[in-house]
Amino acid sequence: MKKQHLRVHYKKLRSALSSKQIDNLSLQIANLTLQLPIWKHSFFHIFLTIDSLKEIATEPLLSILSGKDKHIVVSKSNFETRTLSHILLQDNTPLKINSWNIPEPENGIAISTEQIEVVFIPLLAFDLRGNRVGYGKGFYDDFLNNCSKDTLKIGLSFFEAEANIADVEPHDIPLDYCVTPTKIYTF
Image (cartoon, rainbow, N blue to C red):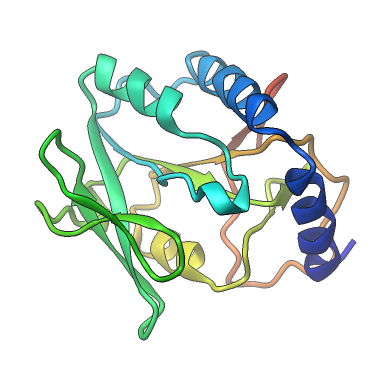
């Protein structure tokens, strides 16, 4: 299937999930991440959930990262340049919902992309080769392209892998892992 068809299909599947299902599936995903070989790293980038899009609730994963004393990094979006800046998430970091309904830090300690060792990536779909389908704006492709070649890229998905995404482009950055409620895919 092509990306646009996958976007429509998986948005529809997500919209059918109840809040309780999202919470339960998100907790299962967070618990499975404990099996990943990533916990020696220090700087973890994670997205903050856009509730209106019925994204994976990242609060359970944030609790795990905090409990393991990891440096948690979140992004602030610039829609004019289609870039992300990265801020260390601390107890006193002020968060605000932007005009696109994305929770973001208002300000804080800037973290360079080179410091980030693990990135948890929001997505709509992925395939058996680690290709992913996001919302189509390119924010994460640009961000991941600027990370170290050793940065681990981990997708989080409510749903299992598609066999193949038909229209993968050269600038698309594949995943190293994807975690679903029942399985860890390794690419």
